[in-house]
Amino acid sequence: AIRMTQSPSSFSASTGDRVTITCRASQGISSYLAWYQQKPGKAPKLLIYAASTLQSGVPSRFSGSGSGTDFTLTISCLQSEDFATYYCQQYYSYPRTFGQGTKLEIK
Amino acid sequence: EVQLVESGGGLVQPGGSLRLSCAASGFTFSSYWMSWVRQAPGKGLEWVANIKQDGSEKYYVDSVKGRFTISRDNAKNSLYLQMNSLRAEDTAVYYCAREIHTDPSGDPYYYYGMDVWGQGTTVTVSS
Image (tube, rainbow over all chains, first blue to last red; front, side):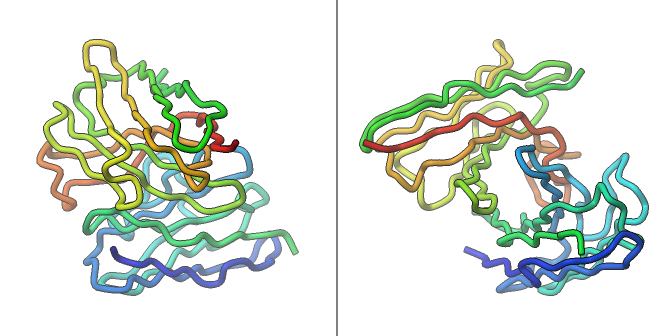
């Protein structure tokens, strides 16, 4: 199975900050990567697919980039509602695998 | 309104069985691949299984192969997960999710993620 590793696992930031989360695949996955946001007690929400395509309705402050093994999720100007846990997921091959998650907390 | 509602979770002893259901509404269920994703308490997400629109293709994470079976009934707009030989490590919230594919083949090039999720149903495996 392809292993997905996110960094950092958690960190603190302030509203208005620009933040970047990294996701690394154990082997090349082309651009077959999605990002999800999850808030406590809630189901995940799709943010980005194909590494950089924003899902409909997702604010433009979210962006994704990368291909091959290295990917990033950037939030350009943090809003209070963005404090959550973020997961990357590869769908290059089965089993589809998630990263361990990155918890974004308020500083 | 597009909606997925899971049911069937509960407390079960190790070695026992449980069948989860996911009722879909507000969209043409038979046109979509569907997935199950789980989340153990305090842990991250784990993709469990998925199934093609007509049920002809199914895929599983290794840890559940031979124990879990995904199925669907398009006439009832329902997705299922039959879980046998349950273990403590299967304890989790189980979500069903709709997959976006712009081509029915399942080729990842045409896959756009899981865009609709249920609220989850909790499975606890304990004696």
